[in-house]
Amino acid sequence: HSWILVIFHTSVLYERHIHTYDHAMEITRLDQGREGDAASLLARAMDLDPVSVWLFPDPEGRARALPLVTRSFVDRAMATDRVLVDSSGDAVSAWIREDGTGHGAPRDEDPPEEFAPYAERLAAMDELASSRHPAGPHLYLPMIGVLDRARGRGVGSAMLRQRLRDADLPVYLEASSTRSRDLYLRHGFTPFGDPVHFPDGPPMFPMLHTPR
Image 1 (cartoon, helix red, strand yellow):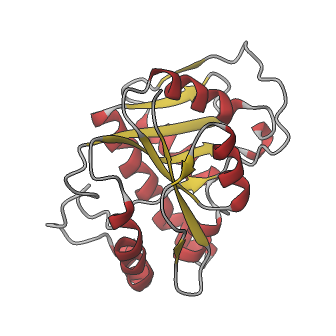
Image 2 (cartoon, rainbow, N blue to C red):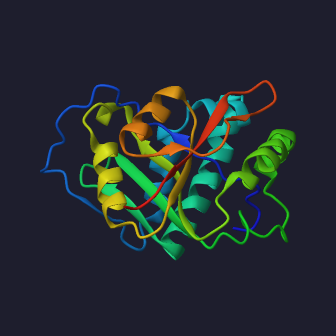
């Protein structure tokens, strides 16, 4: 979807007190044909994320615009790397392989009308965040979404461990809260430059994980 103007990480892994992960819940790659389900779950999980709320302040507009963003991420992840899901249907993570030559999709199409009320903020995010990606090939984790009922069980952390264990490239993300930043620090990510500050908005924390 070349009308997506901006890529951002929505860190909804609020697992400060991690419980033992239920190993009966298997983490697998998303099957072809289930992209819509994964995008819908991500939109639900990230609805109250600080960056999501700043981008799309009104709930009704956010309900229309956010699923377009999440579907774009899911489609890009399926095309370039993978989408991980857990067997309970409560969590999704999208992993995008980038070559480092440019960030985001081409802009040869008009954005959808759902984005029109938020054009200024989308442009600000695009300008401030897009340039922060690593210059070389890397994996980009734009989002992990965990529904409220599953938070605290460690499912998001289990997804991170599984993909990081097999990653052959650096993994880049932007944490959208100090809580999620602390979680990623525990998984071996380190700060990658200064935080990104949006006009009258929340900070985002660029982070990088380097394979050992």
